[in-house]
Length: 287
Image (cartoon, rainbow, N blue to C red; front, side, top):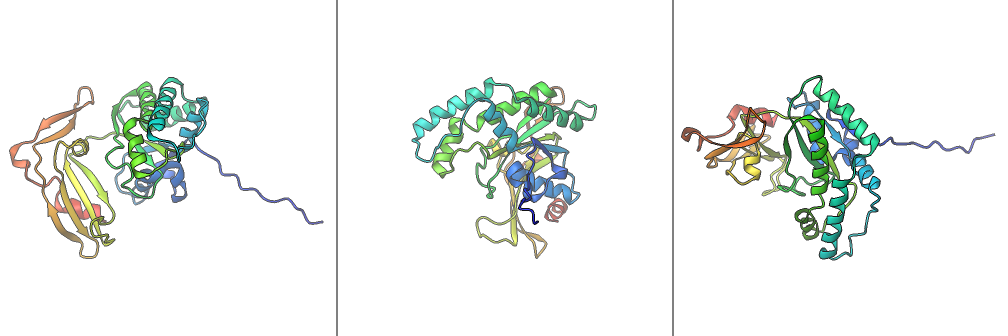
């Protein structure tokens, strides 16, 4: 007699996923930025160790507050902003769910390996375009210890429901959701220069070109508008920069070695109009 039993595939939802273990099908759990970092890690390029607090952990926290996902599609902005304040207050008030907190602490223990080093917290969203929320998703730097990390996580999740973020969502017609934010928890390093890369040219829409921007010190000097970054257009087939613009950089943002807080420092005159990254570094990034 043939069995009518059907095999059911159950996908386990994780609260944390390490970048070194992440796969493309984890996109909805860890978001675009984390997927890109995991791919760089798999290419054996230097990436500080990190794990993600997944969208499932975010949903679990929201569920634990007793909130139910409202329908924002026909909601006026004013009503949405009032609801956003309510959600923010709940996220800051309630503790993390027990299982989320347990998994987070275990991930923190493995990341520290007996040390006490500063961490950075980055938001990663589950949208295909790198321009969604661009310049709005600011990282939290210099987090020391588990208590600071938990506070920062709740602040990041609450920030997603801030007036600034909700107004952007309404303007861009991106409906507020309870499942589109993941957090990357990563060892913080003090870079000589930092920046960002876009894997195609958004101006010309050419896939054979990509954009690299960089400045001395932490990349927050760019996102805060303190400096104009260097801008490079790299051509994949020609293996060279086909266009570059060196920005005026009078200051840089550094990490204070005493308290790990970001500090603004003057940039020596000889470096203000020079490139933050060398041609060899550009070529290495292109590979």
